[in-house]
Image (tube, rainbow over all chains, first blue to last red; front, side, top):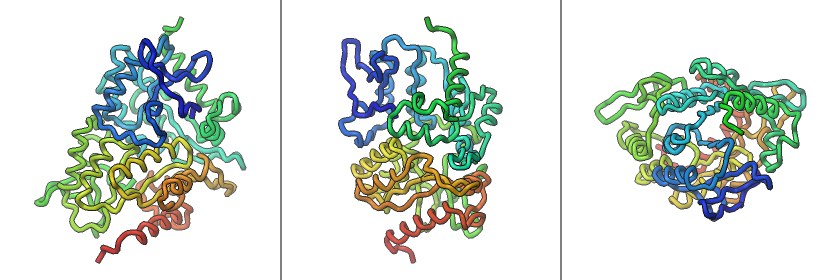
Length: 211
Length: 211
């Protein structure tokens, strides 16, 4: 999605050098995908091996000075999530951004993730609803493909902020598919407006620790 | 989705009795969800505990005579998948039904799952593409929300059958959301036709071991 497939991770004095997306090094990445020899190699790893790598990704990568470290986890409440929370605890993470789709079966899963955050003492920064409705590019009518409003109800129920809804957007999909810069390509799209508003709410709510 | 939330699992002479959905006992279920005290309880389990439960779900449930046992796994190639393949190996499973969405980032994940099947000696029954396009209920125009054709390309690349595409269908979503019987409610919907055709292909390809 970021056009970084096939890039390699190098060893430097201070550990693994992450993959930089631009000359200004404003966005750096680390992923198990960079460590595979072939892109369709299966990562058939049990919990302990995954946990060890997650710890290394926090401690052994030469991240340098970061404004934000974003960890994108799989769904659920298992090894990856416990290892991530443990590895980040000494760095006092700002919290978890919890993403759901609108339908009841997804909201049910995410309720269990909110319970996980409470049990592990991780603050919940807020809930985002993804895939909320689709505006037809032919007739401009909006349809709730997967039901509607589940994210907002969940946030109210859990007493955490609801940060916004991101619609299904074929323009966003196309940018991701082709590894293009969505911000440059489709600044007028509905997903762009939704994502910008959510990002602004997160920035407004996070402590002013930046220089 | 099946209207079975809140149902409980009972102990019987031959092990755990699964949850039956109908009087004829034509569909029986087992899920960790039935073992939780509260529906939003988080299952914060590491690999070994999950592996043990998966084995129990195969060996300690009084399944009785089954025509088919369907195991719905999370995405990925980790503990759950290894434990499932190991637990089912003595029963000679028919194979894996691999589901992807059309976009490249999902197809990439699923390529790794096909590698996993090859490594573990699990036959691939075929690839299904889910969320393939959305037909607007207002103007009847079809839009490829998430790109198109990724599932079919993947099947060709891997040399396995392509079984079909299931469109995004708000009627299917509504039935699942409300725990209704989609087959009764919307027999004319596009997702119904797609799912029926896929099921028929699987039945045609499986050995005639039924009485």
